[in-house]
Every structure is written in C-alpha cells, then in structure tokens.
Length: 107
Image (cartoon, rainbow, N blue to C red; front, side):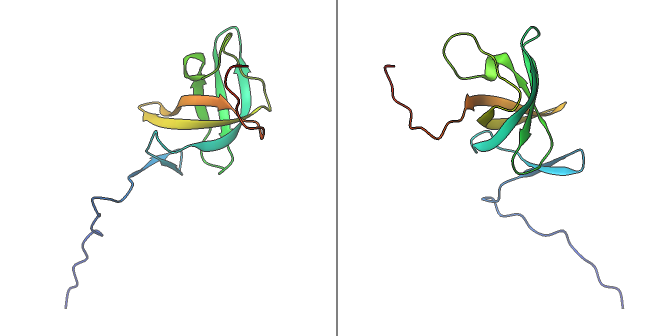
C-alpha cells in the first residue's frame, strides 16, 4: 500500500514567511520589531541592525531612518523598525530610535 502525502494547505489569511540564511524572517513591512544597531557607517549612510528576536541581521540605509535632521544611527542604539524582503535579503523599510519616554510633538 502506498500513501501519498500532500503539502499542508495554506489559509489565505496565513502570514507568508521567507527563508534567508537558514533563518525565518517575517515577510511583512507592517510589523514593528525591536533591535539594536550592530554598526552604521555615517559617511556611507548604511549599516546593519540586530533584531531582538535573533533572526538574520537587517540592512539599513539612511533613507529608512525616520527622524528629523541628519539621519544617522549609533552602534548599540535601540531601535524599532519594519522590514521588507529584497533579492539581497531583509532590509529595513522604516527605522525609528526607541526610547521608553513617550513621544511629545512640538519639541
């Protein structure tokens, strides 16, 4: 007797996952994640973030930094970010410095 197995069916509401460097990375740019700046080259305007969930490092370009003024990050700085999957791997879509203080507009 031969048993045929079929791949599990996907619900249309299930969140797709992508594999990069043997690590599962959420394939959504709307999910905010916490992390730390691994390194950032201010002159070249790019670097990498280390997600707190221990998934693959995430590339960050200065254009993704959501702050006023000069857009830079410091190694060890805590951030929140969204990711997008590119052909080169995960990349930050939006990055904001994270502080435990509430945001107050107009200051």
